[in-house]
Length: 566
Ligand code: C2E
Ligand code: CA
Ligand code: CA
Image (cartoon, rainbow, N blue to C red):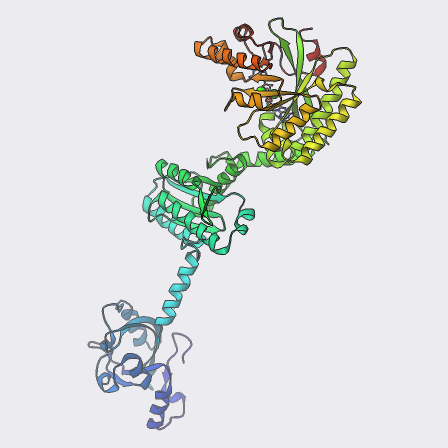
């Protein structure tokens, strides 16, 4: 067989067998063989010979083919455009190779791979053509199946990343510049949640997630399952679809017949702003989804500064691990004054972090991060020890006012963490010769308090420390919390302080009600965030006996704070 297009067969090449023997040999070849004359002009070549394999493949007996045109084999799906190239190669003595759809005698179509080689006479001109043909229908179907497998995810029939790239490119070309949204849907805790499911339940959930995405975006939009628990989708930007996606993903999932909540975090990026191809957009959307996982949001839209914000978050996470050892932490003290006399009656210790790498970072930024990474536990112990030691010195020097520090729920997440904090506090109080009621613990009220956190808070109260309910009135305030926790003080949030200061009747009534309930429960009411004389005056009149805020003093070094209202 010729190896390249220029090859051909010359009769003088081989010793000749008797014609009859030769015909038998060719009949035993498994490929279909057809020999035609070399007439390329209309009406084209005439068949001179076909072998047995040809008869089997096409159903045409030799008697019907010989003397006829090979066009007998052609039909509706035969691509005739390729025949022009074929003719010009053959006319120049070159072989031709290709694929074509041919038809059997019974009308059935099949794909065949064929090769036509000219036989050259002594002058080098084609005297006949030998066509060998092989049925390629199977190979074609296999190639189609392989391609489908490459473009799809076997479990959900959603696209694979390869398929998504192609479909996204087509969608992009179709929409001609109109914005597209690309979403990355990530299931939180895949590594810990999915392995708990049986394979069948896992597959059912994967299909359910894909169906929900399709339901939100409508049919025909590319949706890919990238791997366990991670999906991508694209659609012409549409806030309603996005809203629907967010809602629908948050609905409970039926697992083992029971509805369960699975935390899905949707990140969204937009073409053309955030990237040009599927990979760039998925990577931006994934980053946004990751931000959602960290901050507990269902839906985060990628913004130009998301990447930078992520990097800063990483730097804070890492910096916090060594902040205490590096001596980067300190405390600022904000005085609490009695109302209406305005004499110093307490202090609040507030954490400050001056990072060597990032400069000053505010607690509103780093405390939530420390809570999610767990570094709040050692940092909290540092705060407790440091504030007790400093307060001990103030007491020794003669100013005996109580001081508070802030405690977040993440610091009471395990009995072990609570044990360590309590032990550190008791030891520090002993070293500093402080009575336990010199220490107040400020903790925010929360509706999703567990019995464990309430028990932990009671342990602090049982050792004589006072409990302050912080930020009261900020979110889901309930008088129930006041009665539930062994608190001695309730601190009105700055928002309440402002409303009281505005003189608005309704707000005044709210504060009045709060104060009277607190009084009934024998709680001290502290107003925080007082910035104006009007606020201080109104709150004093409404029954708050303690105030704190910039009007009196900002957080400052302890020595200065002790001199305020003295
Ligand atoms: P917080 O406990 O509600 O503390 C009051 C915040 O309001 C402080 O912000 C304080 O500086 C600020 N502030 C005080 N007076 C005024 C005022 O008149 N106007 C305004 N606009 N703000 C005022 P800071 O120090 O940035 O602390 C923010 C939050 O960080 C604290 O809120 C507390 O939740 C948390 N935090 C601070 N230190 C610690 C700590 O050691 N441990 C824990 N777990 N959380 C802490
Ligand atoms: Ca506080
Ligand atoms: Ca507060």
